[in-house]
Image (cartoon, rainbow, N blue to C red):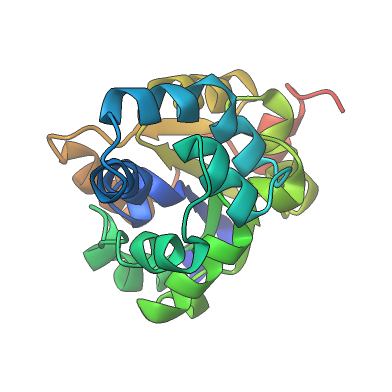
Length: 213
């Protein structure tokens, strides 16, 4: 249990723990309402995603803005819930949580993500769940990583895993050791090796010396 006491593994939600549910949901949204997927994705990326992740819109106005007209919010919520699938790290979470503290750091909405952690039986594997609509910051903003430092125990080694290169770069800029969850899956072996290692990566003290609050 020594390793578990001094290692912290911080995982992204959408492309690591789960398998890109929003991308799947947008495709179904466009199909249900006979809309152009290109238009739906453009609306999402042009501002709605930011508002969603910051918790600035409730679900119903979010769906209506996405469609450009009123939609059935209850139906869309069922569609959303059905869009979640286990991500590439899902089968490793139980093992990893026995070797390190697991935290989740996700651009998401608590009302969407927390029920899914429970539904997939993994909520209790995470010591801490940090979601953008409650922290107020969206990766790759530097401040999105503040909670990692604020709640970190001195001396812990930290590894952050995300499927977006810009988020990994942002973590590295804050002094957090990061690894990209690339499609080839080689990063899974890297994470397992890091968890088994005795001295790999900066400790919390080393990381915080490079970070100003």
